[in-house]
Amino acid sequence: EMCIRDSSRAAEPALAKALLARAAHLRELARHPEAVAAAEEAVTLTRAEADRPQALAVALIALAGELTAAGRPADAMEAAREALAITGVRPDPLLAHLLSRLATDLGRAGHHDDALIPSERAVTMWRALPRSGDEVALGQVLGEHAGLLQAAGRWADAIEFSAEAVAYWDGRAGQEQERLAAALTDYAIRLRRVGRDEEALAAASEAESLRG
Image (cartoon, rainbow, N blue to C red):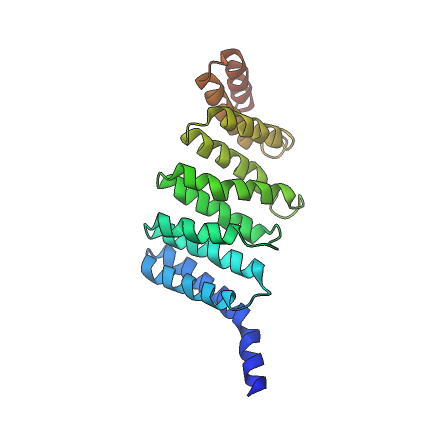
């Protein structure tokens, strides 16, 4: 009996991952109640393992994403806040991607202030991760965070993160010229909005020169 119990517990991490994968697939099919149910089952499995805070954080953020897609933003933020309060969670590309996706989904649904919560954590996490593997993720999340700040009316903060996105892509200009041009265009729009017209014109001109 002890052997069976141990074997069952050993299989739970793989089962939780399979449930989250199923939830993501169901979401693509717009079968949102079923996607939520699968993600909730994954959370239940990981919650039972006190020594797996990373897995619980991933499951909760994935659940928050499914709840957002199902039109339940309040429940989504409850799950997200629980995940973000977990101690012992380390920077992780999967979790960072899920946070970014959740922020994007909340922003598209018009919940800009809520979206900033997972977005800020995603930025922090991508900054802490080594620059290997997903090389463009930090630049993308900086630009997305700037867009969410803009949507929330926080123009000064949006400009700050937009400038950081420009600097990021500028460091990779040989490989990501179009991304740099797009970041410069966004930066110019935000500068113009706060009356920094000369800087806006310079950024817009640089973007146009990059596009030929």
